[in-house]
Image (cartoon, rainbow, N blue to C red; front, side, top):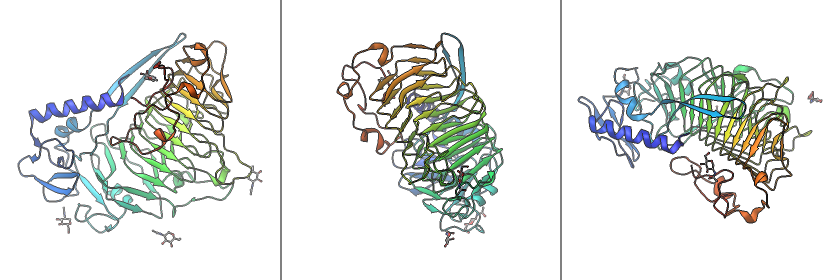
Length: 483
Ligand SMILES: *[C@@H]1O[C@H](CO)[C@@H](O)[C@H](O)[C@H]1NC(C)=O
Ligand SMILES: *[C@@H]1O[C@H](CO)[C@@H](O)[C@H](O)[C@H]1NC(C)=O
Ligand SMILES: *[C@@H]1O[C@H](CO)[C@@H](O)[C@H](O)[C@H]1NC(C)=O
Ligand SMILES: CC(=O)N[C@H]1CO[C@H](CO)[C@@H](O)[C@@H]1O
């Protein structure tokens, strides 16, 4: 499996190649800004307009209508959307996971129409950069396939959640992004259900600061969703990309995919502090991919912490999900005084159901630490899961709890958990710390400093590479942040 960084590198090479072939920036493309190395001259009839230190853009007047003729010319240079097949063979079955691959560039380049939203805007404006809308919903309703909605910096506090219920296409995606270089927070505190009463139900349409349903081919980028009735809620919606989002302090799961969901990418999500007063902690996870089915879903580079229930929860999701380079910690601790407390507290709860359903999820290079319960658990999922090169450290339950599934465990590291592992007969295991034997205590690690992974992300929004829980002897059992 190619690493995320390698895919970005491939995109950069492609961009350079296209730059050589066509040294002028396309309509609406980036044409300047700190750190930008592409063409700075726009095609005939378009002008490179300075927006801020990080971003200049080719504009022709300012328009908020859909123009699609230039998209094909610029797409290849700015995104490297490819389809990759990853085949993993276990001793019993062949697992085939088909995924879409997506990249994040430092500055997303708008193609097609661009619509702006600003805290100083008005819904009677025309949506151009100099005449922005005030409402994110207004921009969504105005957009046509291929449009990019740029939200200018600031905190937005809509009184109704944002409904997204229309689809783009593979070549004309919708994008909602923070304007490059600007910080956008969407605060759901004035929405319905923040919080709902104890034992109250929350209507489907009220779920999520963004309620995305029957809406395919959307990209969400660099938005911080707080205090909502769920942060991001994506139901029966596929081919959507969620890049560099933060979902925190919501009154249910920070991020949820549910129902018929396929080929979604969740990349570099930070989801923390989510809790559900209406259920005393029973169901607010950092990232829940639950109660549904669909191929090709990928989670990569997420951090899920201090959520009341689990870090990740795959309850009743029936189709394999690929999870990589993700860290879950501190979940399942009652920080809200809920009574009776219903939080589960697993780092990675990899299934379960009523009744249980089998799903052959693949988990690679992930860390679970200091969770109240298990680090990684099948939770009743009786499929064949593949876990390779993961680290489970200082969890209150079992490091790798796979008592219900004949899973395949290789190169995993368990240290300082209440118990090390369980594995159902018929499963396979090799080269895990407990197979290697010896003592796996903190003295074995170069660093146990959690601040290496709990602090700020790097300039590419990656978890910074560090020595966190790497072995002094240089062997590669367990996970690494060097990806
Ligand atoms: C939108 O409004 C701005 C500000 O009034 C104006 O400069 C611009 O020409 C308008 N654009 C369109 C497409 O009407
Ligand atoms: C949010 O709701 C409060 C109380 O209902 C109200 O005072 C405040 O103006 C609302 N804020 C916004 C931005 O609508
Ligand atoms: C909420 O539901 C639980 C479980 O059904 C019940 O034990 C409890 O009494 C209910 N509490 C309230 C305030 O309705
Ligand atoms: C410690 C270490 O390097 N572990 C491995 C983590 O997983 C990646 C990818 O699966 C491997 O390349 C590393 O060797």
